[in-house]
Image (cartoon, rainbow, N blue to C red; front, side, top):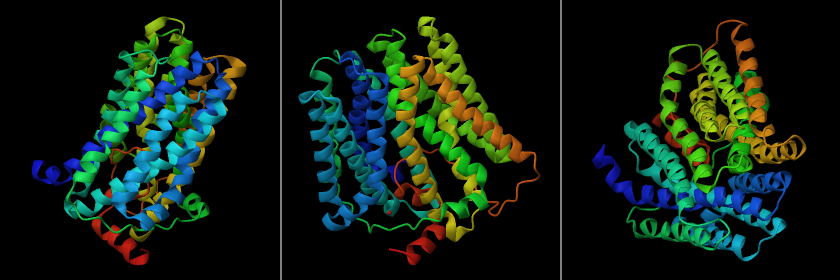
Length: 417
């Protein structure tokens, strides 16, 4: 494994540094916004603005990369992200923050696209899955580690914004220093959603539920913890534990989904995530006891989308895997953009407990749909070789790393992501 990782070490270092900065900013904005007196609905809209930018970036970023080239585009996106980080503390205004979050979302998609297309070109076909697994682990652990910088200073001060900006800027250095040749950028077509629904309706429903819930978690999870009275250190622990539980439990849940009807596995995983939401709502009035609910929720919630992807792959022919997953990614992204705004509105109307209960409704509905689907008969699998891989929603370029070499090659010849 070490000889495989050495050539791409600079890319992985760039990923880790960038996510330390942007992961810190995500939680920092929730805490600073609460200090500024922003309502839960406003904070939800700010969270939605980021995912709206992420969604738009899937269309904007590839065109910019083709125009500038990978190295210059990477510097361009990093500069935009760093400027956005500092802009939040220079102009403390909800509307300005929404615009900056859109810019940050677009920049992050550009960053992911550059890194993932580079990784995909460097990973040998037989080892692509291992590279992808390591890359996803770096993503999750960097996001978890970013929360611990909240111990350094108060969100009301300039310090943490400066730290986040420094990480984003320094992330450019290892990538700019790499001697790896820039890769070609593919353009993955997307299957119509009607085709995906015919092939795997459970995947469509699961992607929607995961997007709605996880978008709200990333946008408002720290707000919820703060509303419970947790200090900055407690909020950091709340988010960190949820992410680490998700990182550690993805593989066991994934192996379960490989060993039984994936619809039943998805129903079980969604039910556990829904239970975690209920536990958070119940334990929210008992101080740090809510951390137990966060662990249960994170352990299952982070596994839902990768199991959904594996279920979709079960029902697609090799030549449709990349385009089908690209369409599912966009659907998940659209739901993630809606999730924080919807959950924020509910929190404004019903109080902080509405957020974990919102999680429970999203995942509970998905669990029920998957369970009912599994009772209608045996699942008709198209690709028996399909299997679970740990996954975070990043960019369409990551999909090429999690598909067999022959499938990626087929798509590359069909269209020049």
